[in-house]
Image (cartoon, rainbow, N blue to C red; front, side):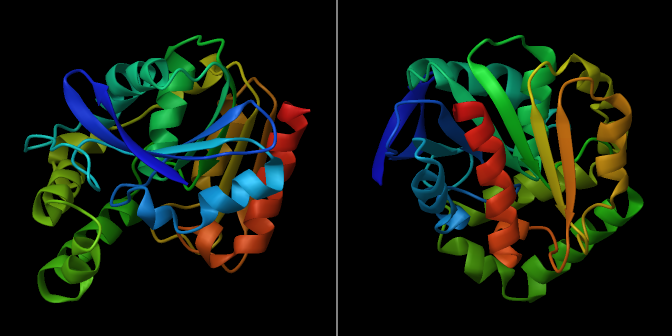
Length: 257
């Protein structure tokens, strides 16, 4: 794994790369709402080894060791990340062929980009526990996590990974709990995604129900596989590692061959 920083719009993004046996496509990993490069654990390394594809991960502005993102974050922050930051990062990293792999917020960002931009470099997208619209249990879970951050051990755990953990948490949590965020809905972009898709969700995900997968089945026109992963919550790549990585590997290899 090689770490570096890339300048995007005059600010630095923390990035990491893992080599594969083949030159392309690159698996571009987009982390969850409180994630960063390191919180993928060994998933990037595993994907590089299993698929032979190079893997590229980054911490978004306000996360990990990347430059800060000014507070407060607006309810449209995922659209900004998808439409302004991500294409410029792909340009700066000189990635010519990519499969986007996004977890939670990162999955939503990947879907926004693929639905709004006809980028020929994008060959497929993998969505893990992505959000396409807001559900009541989603908001309730984010309200509960605010309590854990304030009085539980979450702040200390996250503090090991983020330069300014309070800004990271309150940026994300505050945006989701903004009443305006209730109107977040990217379902209208789904029919315009023109590349193959794999969508995975934990069967016991407290942040979303299988209605998120059903809306894909109803609206996506491109080749689509959806899988509800048993015995997994919001991070099936960590909680049900083998079945999740097997699904992702098969999908990627079908595109890479």
